[in-house]
Image (cartoon, rainbow, N blue to C red; front, top):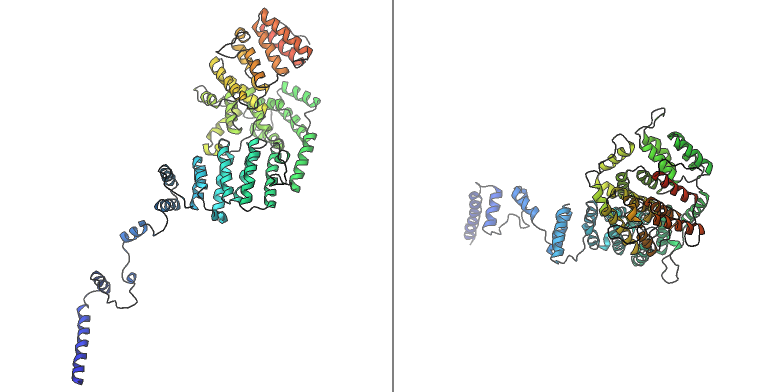
Amino acid sequence: MAAAYALGARAVTTGRYAWARAYTTVSAADALRAQAEVGSNKDLDPRGVDYALFETPTPEYVRQSRMAPPVSTRPAAVETMRRVLKEGQYAAAMHLFAQLRELRTPLAEPLVEYAHAARWCVATQRADNVVPLLERVPIEAAHSATAVHQVAQALLLLARDATMTGTAEQAILVAAERGFVQALPRALTELYHGPLGGTPRGEALWRELVPRLRAAGVSEAGLAALFSRIVRAQVRARHTPLHETLPSTSAAPVAFALDAQTRALVQRRVSDEARWPLLPPEDQARFARHAEAHDLLRMRSVLLGAAARGFVPPLEQLATLLVAAAEHTHIPHSEPRCSTGAFLRPLRRRLQAYPGLWETALLRAREKAGDWRGALRLWQMRFVPSPLVCDALIEARLGAPDAALGAPRTYAATVARQSARRPATQRAVRARLVPTAYALATALRALVQACGRDAALLAQAYGALVAHARAGVPVRAACFEAFVPALSRLDPQRFVHTMPSDRSPTLWTIWQDMRACGVEPRATTCTLFLQALARARGRRAWRAAATLLRAMESGNTLPAATPHTYRGVLHVLQRLRPGARLYK
């Protein structure tokens, strides 16, 4: 028995040594690979072998492992969108997003990467995709600082673009629903400081926003702080604030109490408006004398002194200074030599307390100098577009071959060239001003100058004004007055004819359109009508002028005649008879 046991032990030992001798000529990695190919389970270590200890992965294996989609329970479309967005390929992601939406492929699962894509879409002028992307951002992403920053930047860029105001309103409402409360204040401040300030749309947006913010968990104190911030933005831009237009009801109020800072700002603004009178008559006389002498230094000194004492410089006098300064690149007779930009900078800084005053005066200066190209470019870049001013006609006139820049050695042309060199994206996101009635009338006068003596273009511009005015857009008499001198000079006899004309408007059609739009004529309107009748040189025109003047003198149905009325009529008569004299 012992012998048999020894014999068996020797056989087992011999077999083990034979196995070792059989594999001594190969490496350990080859042995492990051979066992894997034949399906052997005879590992050296029963716990398994780490193959990475014996050989490094090949480049092909690494590439395949990176390209292989990870195992996920998400739908294939959602997983593909997540992978492309995570890699930063936003253009390809938007193309895929459009295709999936066209195929009605469900993208129900939210992704935080959509917040980054929304900001990229705004920055690349693809704002149509912003709202659908924000709707797919998860609610829990509102607690991520990175996601909140991306959404805040997207909303701010939308709010700064005056052409995307409607999209900005929708995006703000969606962001409030998703819980991005911290991303709203800056965008709301930009909107209520600009296009929505003091408008019914701004009030409607706030009414829709308050219930969504309450549903998102915002406290009443947080709503009051946001409300005060919006009111401060409106007050600084001289809009009617929300706390004066919104009713305060007991059930779910939308108007909140103002904080101390906002109340102080409102009171200071009211006192400032009462304390800001126009330029005194003696300063106006001094400015007129310096303007006749073309003394730019003293003209600026008068306006600077008046602004320092709390007086508001009149727009016409400020525009007169800008017209005279824009003719030079350097101020004449200045020691040391001073550029026009440096010369005007102190006055511009002083007038920053009056929002929009400098831009409106600059628009008037361009129009007053006959530079309709510069005026229309300034209108496009710095003011919120108005339907009363035909944008298509502006684009057509500015795109004409004769719409080049002005004289190369003037300050106005230098500013225009510098503005043209700015990137389009930088100009698009620049905050714009809500135009006043004065700025709107000035833009219309510049557009009339651009039309020249083309009756068809003048009729097109006037038709756009009347169409939108009849639709309910607020309009003033100055907007209609912009067309009277040009149409009268184009054909004096036809303009005062009583028969209606389909080719271009006449004096009587303008009068009827003003009444249909609910616009009452003022003394300037009647003065322009009198000038047109005097320019026609006919017995019937003279009788109509005398009847109109008697109606103004009576003061019952028309505004009373002023000394400027007679001065305007005599000015036209003197031009018709160059040898005539005027006596005061």
